[in-house]
Amino acid sequence: MFNICLIFLLLIPASGQQTYQPVFKVIPLGVYGGNDESNLSSYMIGVSGSDKYVCLDAGTLHDGIHKAADAKLFSINTETVLKNYIQGYLISHPHLDHVAGLIINSPNDSNKNIYALPFTIQTLEDKYFSWKSWANFGDEGEKPLLKKYHYVSLIEDAETALNNTSMYVTAFELSHSNPYKSTAFLIRNNSSYVLYLGDTGADSIEHSNKLALLWQHIAPLIQTNKLKAIFIETSFPDEQPLSQLFGHLTPALLMNELQELATLSSIKNLQQVKIIITHIKPVGNNEALIKKELNELNTMHLDLLYPQQGHQINI
Amino acid sequence: MFNICLIFLLLIPASGQQTYQPVFKVIPLGVYGGNDESNLSSYMIGVSGSDKYVCLDAGTLHDGIHKAADAKLFSINTETVLKNYIQGYLISHPHLDHVAGLIINSPNDSNKNIYALPFTIQTLEDKYFSWKSWANFGDEGEKPLLKKYHYVSLIEDAETALNNTSMYVTAFELSHSNPYKSTAFLIRNNSSYVLYLGDTGADSIEHSNKLALLWQHIAPLIQTNKLKAIFIETSFPDEQPLSQLFGHLTPALLMNELQELATLSSIKNLQQVKIIITHIKPVGNNEALIKKELNELNTMHLDLLYPQQGHQINI
Image (cartoon, rainbow over the protein chains, first blue to last red):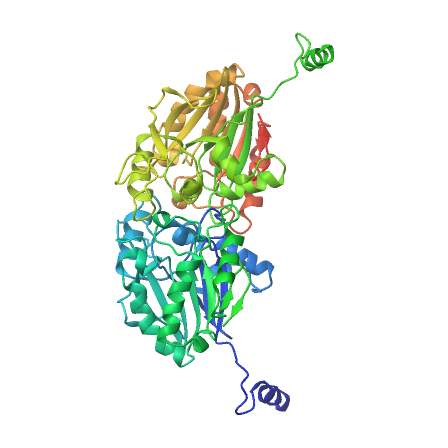
């Protein structure tokens, strides 16, 4: 007993010490925005010390869990990770590259919640869990209802508890090839936050103010060092014609948006936030090109990270 | 010139010699019936000596092409295989595990045909290429139409040419969890045939005669040694309760069906047909169990094969 107490005491940083203890752990189950069916957008997020996660989008599940298991992130088998570790899904928008893993794995999944804004839930019901395309594992939509998944309809800008975890989510609407929509999820655990954006275009291209409103909302969290990370997309390199962005960002457009965010908070504070680049479309040489362009444009010296499937990120 | 002629002469079998020259080559791009997003039903089929294929179902494309390239089956890059080698898609039914690869890869694909019975085309239009779930790359359905894919609506029991290949297809309706449907495709090149069945239940369970009708149709092709292979599913082991088959076959149900087919043709002739087992659902130990059960039940000594992703089968 004495020894155990000593170990605990040694693990607690001395008062005033600046050692940062990560709050969140994120396991990317898929990171790309197309092509590779085994590596599409999905991020398990949980709180350090807990095995209860939710998935931010669900493009790929099985293959990502498998790769994370290969990297020794789990000591249980992949089927149990799916059933027991993942407590729910937060779906940003219903494009197939964000939901395919959820649909394909649904027969082997356990009962859990799907959290989304109403437009996403409506499309899950109408297009996927619709019997003609897949058995209806949801608790709404075309009957019979298998009721494995319970839809939790989020209200924009209102916080909702994430079942069986200590985390909460607030949803914000994004514009993704206007009039089509997407969602940003602000995840909170105590007073620490992570922001995950689904696919989004730039306000200037989308004729929208959705990103401007989001930046206004989160700027105070950056100024107070409460926001630890932003997951945001860069689908195409700058060579992509503006008329063919299909509601996505390029390095230049991303940096413009981050410049706006820095203006609302401060460059110094924004430098403390991990900027995690998602949804690269890995066609030809685009992945290397996007990274090169982002690096060249990163005059604010922001902390850009490129997630890898099955490699944990501590935040 | 003399040497070249000599080589050609040496390659031609002597008259009356029984050396069988494979007619078809099949490259499985995905073989499973669930879970693993990187390995779902899709089979490139072409004629020996040609680089023009069609895909029988399209659950996984990119990952399968990538694995086949790793196995040195292609000397060009994976994007060019997708665009130039695959001349069209034959979709048996619109469940996501048979079309996910087609949808995900559509932005990087070239113009080509999708061949299917009308019920499949209708669901592709309504559920997938519908803008809400994915951009409409088809030439029918919700506007605007991007027209990358031209739908070719097959007529049951009528032969249709497969564009840019020397092959033809005849479609037959199957029952897949009645009233839901699936399709069998009979592929012909000159006087050689391959039969590919999409997901199907047994007639006895489905209260259907679709398989009986199909067996009657192909029995003469078996008796005359024209049918070279049958691709048919065995999704679950015999332990699966009959009430939970969801329109699929088990080893015992498959062997019952093959017994019926042998009665209509002959065991001896059916032994000459490769029986290629598809759509195993690789949950837990099921894959090994299904193979063991099929082996034990194979008292007719049929030529059972288990396709592997990226490994060519010569037929």
